[in-house]
Image (tube, rainbow, N blue to C red):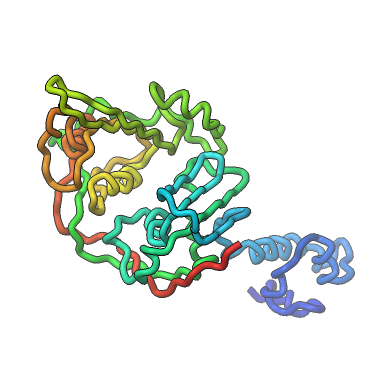
Length: 323
């Protein structure tokens, strides 16, 4: 440390905060003054350069390269679409929904948010280049946007809430036929598929790593009763992320207790119905509800219990600066 503190004797040194703002080696040389090869100051240059680079990037949060935030005036349906090309489009979306999606929470896990966050609606068009590995990887960037444009601040706590826990359905922990270790290419920087390619595989194929394809089908039984079924295919998903995906389908927080590590491909088909503990088949559809589908097709099940789950307590939030 004493040798490092000898830097303090260099002309113009104002502490390590003095490194902040260097935009190139020219500015750094001006800061250092004349340096002779072989001198102690020259030998310290590599150390100082590394410190300067570290200081300039420390504390930076992942952020979109460009983002437009505007109050929604046209109305219409709400949509939230993180895309594989690094673009996030939210239309007629409440701030509460943005927060829930950014942090992967069920509605019951967001505490003390002002009422206006569930009423006032916004349009967001944000982009980053190059795109991340999957659309889910845009959520940390959305959290940064919320902090910068909505002045959003919150703290995490743990509270006991009504929830589901995701566990193995069989005592021997054998998985079902519709789940497998991922066969997707999950290396960072993998190729992003075009919208046309995604549409082509929607009917019969698997999406790229980290992405999900959801298709709704209309059904009609022999007695003419109409219904619907939903097929979900997701590639390269961890079990904690899969539990988060299920929250919107079962209407509660879901906690992963499978103990499964690694990435998986999952496919399951179910009949949509109001959230609840019922496991009865939808009338006339011959398609199981999601709780039954998980057990029969994936070898996993959801058990209802009150348990400790993470919550986000809002400390401050404001209406955004628009652009």
